[in-house]
Image (cartoon, rainbow, N blue to C red; front, top):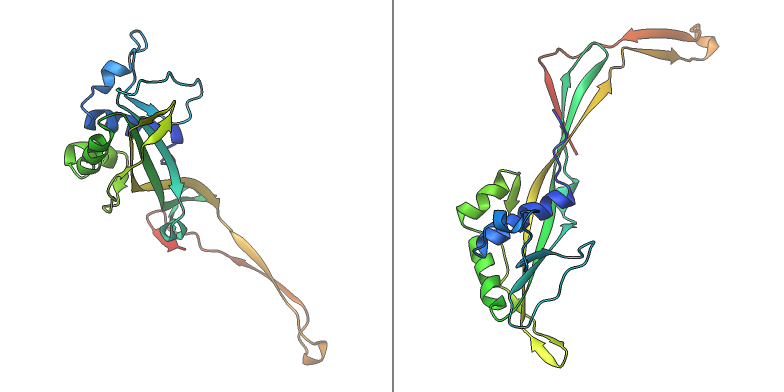
Length: 214
């Protein structure tokens, strides 16, 4: 088994595609390197190469994804299963909470923010998320209208955000402790001298799984 954890780039790409679909765009038509689009309606915040500006009458959405500190992040489920003669296989699973922010500009920004909030609960748009072990926390607050003053004019803006639980799994090997040396010390007057004993350790059966969590 391999580690299961989505990188920042993978999360951004996943939510970019879902957002494009929710706003009525075909992601494939905007992701062709041989035919780049003249205008990108959904963009990732803080692009490395910058991004072209847009006009006040154009609708554009920005995605920002970060991780939230949550009590559920502390919980870990460890599973130990015998591997070979020298080590066991350990799988550690936990839940990571991410926060996705949509910053929408344009005359339809408020309507688009409301549409994203509504469609997050619809199965066609949740399916690609759940297929990647990303699950909506079903408490999404209403969008906030936040017009911005730029160039002497007010640009329409609306923000909406949602939190998601994501499954994270790490796989590793743990070497067996095959023997242990135990030294017993006592008062010489008792008649017991220092004793060193080596105890063998029983290796878990290959078909046995041991669970443990924090």
